[in-house]
Length: 324
Image (tube, rainbow, N blue to C red):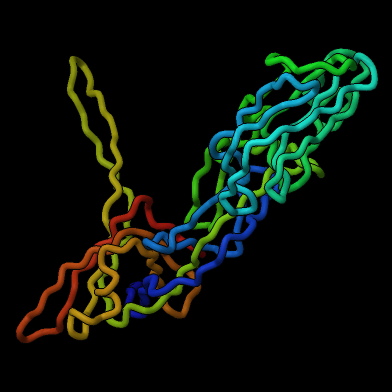
């Protein structure tokens, strides 16, 4: 008969913090990973994610000067830093003849306005393919595209509103597009759609994050661990000649009992109400474990003739995972 006599329960007792740094594209321009396998969600240590891109402002408009655009003041995420850029003007490059040409209005890696010119087309038709004749240019790695200016005239003249394009995801890189989810259990960020491959080398935009990985310590005296898991129930309604059934799911709280030294100064007690990682080994000498993350709740009991103890709950937002 299998028992958990040799089990071990650990909790997130501390954190190793990592300063804002670049995450690594997993190869699909959608999931970006860090050097950590877990990210802490404890208050003060939760990750801060900053994809490169425009945050506020940055409207690009025509001026009365030939070939010139004005760029409104803006803020952007740039290499993990929220950066302010002042209002400025830029000049486009027109094609050598009356054919299509696309110029990209950008913020370069130094935080300055910069114009990047595409290759002259062969006709007045524009291409949507980067770095081909008549198409938009590839943007230098570390730069942010704010807008595209599309012209088919080789004669110097003021630009028109119809020649300036700022559609998010097509002509403009924003920090909040595509949206993303933070994966605490893998130390990664997953976007809801692939980031456009618009940078030199056909690369997506840079994604940066600061985060902390958990440091685990044993709950010295623990018993009766129950992981947070999903339970299912069935309800039914009887109708003429048959029964209609439906199911529902509920995520239950995890629980365990901890035996304490004095119930006041114990390290575990000091972390009550914090969102922590918990790692449970059914056999402390084997590699398999159950991993869960949730808010620690503690209800202490101080009996006169028995060990001081706490009934602990783990209020999780996802079911525990098995790790082999």
